[in-house]
Image 1 (tube, rainbow, N blue to C red):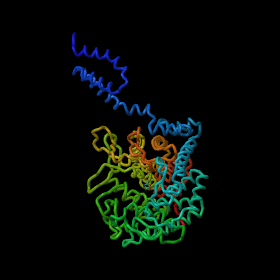
Image 2: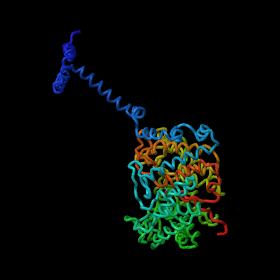
Image 3: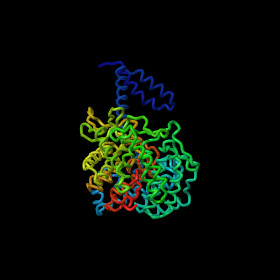
Image 4: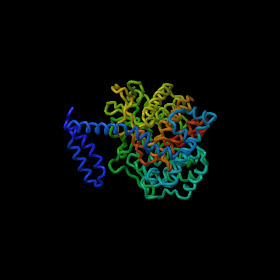
Length: 562
Ligand code: DMJ
């Protein structure tokens, strides 16, 4: 069939050979444009459609291509680590603890210790190279971050190194504490954070090693923190200047956080016992006494803020087991254990609070009936749970182990499953900071994650609970779950030059978006609990002889005579 357009097209195509001889780009562009204009509308539409189709295909296949062909951030990390014997196991997604042990032809438990030691050494390598003596490692930019300027990561990690048997690393760190660490600095520190990480870390290292260097340092910082308690109500301020001996609340409020003022008791009580100086114990127990009798609780659940002038709860009506309240509940039980189960008011408050959780906050998801602890806001249940709440299965199990009601253990088993699912259902195998649970699912999923909550800070709470659950039940699934988390940390957060990084997106395995920060609790808590989870030795920090503070520093249960 004759078609003038077709004829033109054919002649242009033939003429194209001629155009190739042009070296001048301008001429070539003009000739292309002329060719385009000479095409029929149908031909132009077809070409445009084809180009659009290819463009869309390109976009859709980008993630697949990057995953398989382009050496992604993750791929590069893995490649860089391929020489390391342990990583070849740690990076494989499949496999259980038992598989790893079988592959290595070792008795149960033995293969696992080196994997955690190796992870610690890798983290330490980064800290040593780029952040030595500073608070936190920034592993991507290969530098450090400062919070208090007190070598926070190094102090938080001391007892972990001791427990993991890393003698050389411990000796180097001890030298730094001896020669460099000084608390006589014009620096504002947060009372809670410096108590649980620094005072707690020094006290536990003293107990494990018997080295009085650590006790002397603990006494020094403990004494310097005391100005925080000089408030009209005796409820402490949040911040203290260690050098000046002054304390103050945050600039915008005179409130303190309830969890912060009620989770420093284990450490200050122990400091009094060791120094025979009652001022520390008196100060923190005054806080406990006041909170015990305060109005504004709901079935034993506490609000999140307390005023340092009035000593009363403020911003009442919101109840959570997550941020700002979490360790209040943990320390009720643990103080009762620390003191030899004699202080009945602590036990009563703990038991009442767990009943309060059951009555007000517990719900189950749809479709899979996962049990979770929601948040209450002015009578309205918000079905969200912080990862921080995952300390609760471990604490409940610890209580049940010490004679508290058996249904606490039932709840622990259910919540442990939920915390595990918060990891297992994410594309990276790592939990988000906050999970939203579906009560009536219309998308078939139990767990949703909001974009702002997709980060993972290398937090310890789930692994902490897995450790308790394994110690008390010996069910190997808890080790397998912990093993999977370790693999995911190695796959998505490990930085080749040393260290591990928090990430911004647990839902994107191609680019989890490294945040360039290794929190001190990754060494203080996360790796310590992983190591203990994989250990077969129940006497390695026996739970009948020690209580862990909320930063995983073990403190002794007091002998019955003291
Ligand atoms: C740690 O400092 C402690 O575990 C604290 O109780 C909660 N936040 C971090 C870890 O997530």
